[in-house]
Each structure stands twice: as C-alpha cells, then as structure tokens.
Length: 166
Image (cartoon, rainbow, N blue to C red; front, side, top):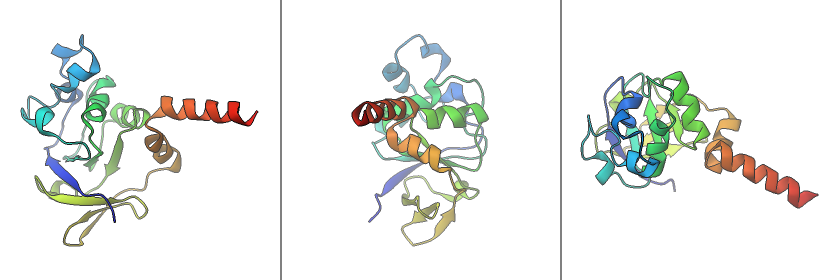
C-alpha cells in the first residue's frame, strides 16, 4: 500500500523568492524554511507535515538560482512538488537536494487537502477514487539521487561503497 499524502494547493508562477524570501537569506536554512511561502500561504511553514505534497500551477520555482528555495521544502519534510512545469535551475537544485518533482499536466486539478498517493513505478498521482493523473517519467539517475537524499549524500554513499569494496 502506498503512503497517503496531503495536498497543499498553490497557483502558477511560484518563484524562488516566495519559497525562500530574500529578507531571510542571511539566516540558516532552518530559519529560512520557517518563512517558506509566507507571502502566499502564511500558515504553510507552521502547518505542513512531513510527507505532504505541493500541487502548483505552471512555472514553479522560477526566478533566481538560490538553492535554499528547494532546500526549505526539504527541511519542512515536503515529499514532492507536482506541477505542469518548473524553472530550469529550480528543477536541478531540487533533485540535487533530494526533492522529488513530478511534472503533471493535470496538477491544477488536485484539490487543497486532498489525499493522494504517488505511483512512481507507473509515474502517476493516484486519487482516493482511483483516478490516475499521468506524470512525465523521471530518469533513473534522478530517482536514485532523490532516494539517496540528494547529490551529496549519494556521492558519500558511493565513496563509502568504494572504500568498503577495496
């Protein structure tokens, strides 16, 4: 049985300054995360639970290249972001930090508070009524990166494996 995830719904064009507000960039990532999305969802950082997901409109993560925009969601325990499209730099930063991004043309049809599961074998979001929303497949190397917790943990695991085998 797949895990059930609560949906937080957002609109289109959520930029990196909304995810990691510039006014807090001098703070550490845990403090930045406390302000994640405060301009559009003031309650988000305090109420999001580990395993929750974001469903957003197109262009999620547009804006600057600040990796804290993805890392704030990781630190808050967000399982995945589901959107029709992403800012290119955000896309790469998210996977590097272990955040799963699912590209789903129908992401906007998900409802606030809806319970869903993720089928990562068939690349779909599954609603409780059984309806499946197709997602674009993710290359195996990016899935492995997310499963490892990001690029740095993945590299550390590889180095340790190499040391153990020699």
